[in-house]
Image: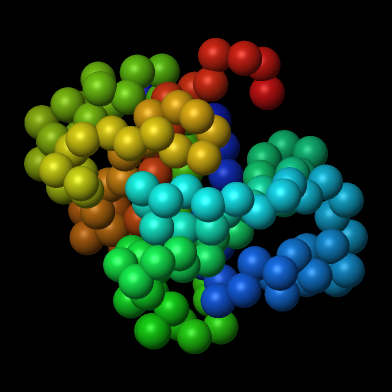
Length: 140
Ligand code: CO
């Protein structure tokens, strides 16, 4: 059921500083504007790569879920990986039936790509926070 790798999430205390690394050090040329995902408590920006994306996320608001991560990793770091699935509710039910913990009580939220996403707890995935995202209907 696991599909295409959609993006790798990278937490950072400053998207502006991280953009410099991807643009100036690595030579990335396609980088989106930064915007807020209020419901998820993050600022987000995408670095487009030929085969995937890097999702830069910076805390937004006092209750950002990234706060704890950045306290442990003050310079930021790899935060999650995101795979596409055909049907988010079917994926959620499958994860839960197999005993994995789906964050947010298993309720999908609309992610940065405008499609529903869920997160699987890292304790059930070998320490990796996994985002599952319904494949966007339009072409990539
Ligand atoms: Co993500």
